[in-house]
Image 1 (tube, one colour):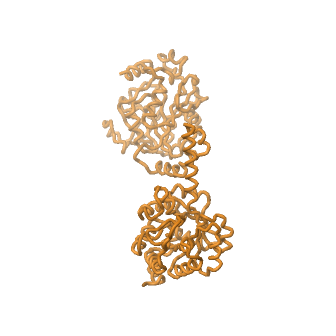
Image 2: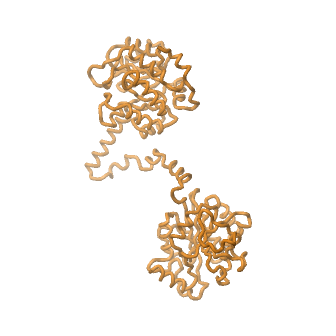
Image 3: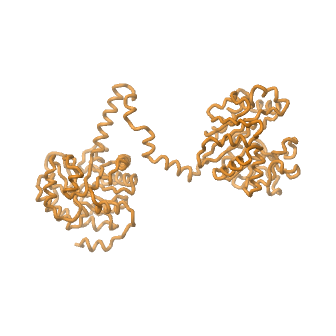
Length: 558
């Protein structure tokens, strides 16, 4: 039979900071190690938050969670699944798995050790009862295995472990079986010699005197562990004075849950509603915290590319739009944002389109007759400089609202209506900065629209109107810097800015204070910042004249 020292030569170190190493560190430190029983990761997290030092993957609690007796009815696989879930939920806090009798003979113990060690638990605890076991607190005969049989299991367990720091705890049920302190001592000493890393002395006497008597005569070196279920008065202060190293509160968690949940359901059934219990139960926010929802959401934002990137939208509706004679009579009392477009105000159509594309963080910048703008669910931002500040001052008004750091920013002109295909193509891009450019009749714009001219790179490809979003072309110049002969298209009033680029654009806007958006973008180009373009030939309409307004109503009606 190989000795424990011979087997140790074959073990590897799993590295610092593992749960098993943390457990061994706890055993060497001054003070009593406090351990809480749990049957799932949620209960283990609650105990960890309360300040316990380690978790006991409780066989009794796990059996109870299945509503079956703690009598070797569940299989190792079910206990292993619970222990693995707990270990993952509280890592790197040590988890000790209650493994009953080892689920069979020495061969079963070998497999048990390898499976639980691989699952990330710090230690396993096996007891010296005969298989199948009977719960220690059930009256009647408690049959114990012979010392020789159990020592064989311990040797098998120690030889099966793969890392040095993984621990095997021997649990003696001699006091439970009524065999007395002498037998408990004899077994504990034999188990220590067999290589057990700690000994759990189990008792159900309500006084705790058997434990005190055992500790008065114990001369071993391994840590002693107790489970004071029936003698709760033996606390950690006395335990430390007695030389006990670890106290396990093995089943208090599930017992507390049973009472609280039973009372809650009785109250709901009695009252016919849950009003009376709402102040006594945890809010959903607590559950989200325990689930790690914030971490999950952050990871989703950072790594999930199956859906659109988080995006907030700014609709620029501050101007009075009274520069065209044909619209002046309509907008003298009503701002353009409130114009009825086939039964629905313009701004509400724009907000609805954004929401259909998955954008819910929407800010509408208003100025002229802002009290009359029906923004609905969107956030309102008033631009007090709307008469002189242009789009730049409107951007600054919107920028005052907080924004999720990972979110992109979509800027939309208030006098533009586009269809969802254009918006979806734009949102599918992942560029630092993208403008939508209409390639139709770039030089046919009226003179006052010079500011919307765009020149793009690679003029030889000018005839290809639809390009893959994966390879958008770069903008060479925009606005007044573009001569009519050099213009390749017209800025369609849609701009998408990445989360990384937005602070640069905002800082540039703050320096300028006022002006047109194309001027701001041209300044970005001059500073060496790339701007991409999504080229379109249809799918949008600009409301500059009454004829445009009539056309919009007619097209939406059809």
